[in-house]
Image 1 (spheres, rainbow, N blue to C red):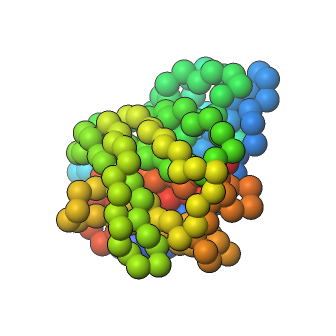
Image 2: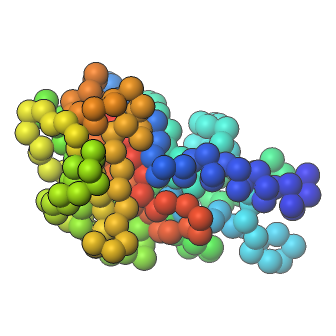
Image 3: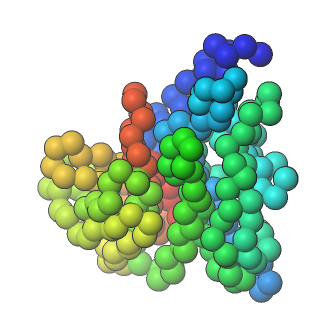
Length: 246
């Protein structure tokens, strides 16, 4: 496979992952005793490795954790489902089919019985894995922001009226490396979430994450939380992605 083919594959993967700035639902089961449950996200706009002495994008990558393949396509904005891991530190590698790789990157130490979102961030040669401990479910509708953008050390977020694209209301803010969560009450509808100042402002509605949630309601089925993920920007793609979580 030549360099153009790898880059073409990357652009296609990013287009699919970034469309609408959203991802699929991810309903995590509670972690069992003796294990942690984690999901992985690619928040790095470009995964680059040294190729023929020059830093270059490795193109479409797959994700390995402790030498085991976790997901076959790991592209900017992608968010995996949750899976079990042993407690402690793990090694994460994004690798292309030719063997070029970003990593191994060590995760922070993970604790048994907890749930985490592990997000690859940064740029060549300074990549790292951030660990966000998942907010506790309360049964109420919730909105969360995972601040995983090294270039934005602080971000505001809130809600808006989905049907009209108006009535923006700032609720909270988050600093880099942290997740902030707010309660929206027992249930809400016609709701969307946004990140950023008035201009530009990135928005996501529950229906963009799950088209069956046509009323933009929370809770919806098993999901009570709209999660927003803020990454460093990539040309031609939204920098905010979403998930519906427990």
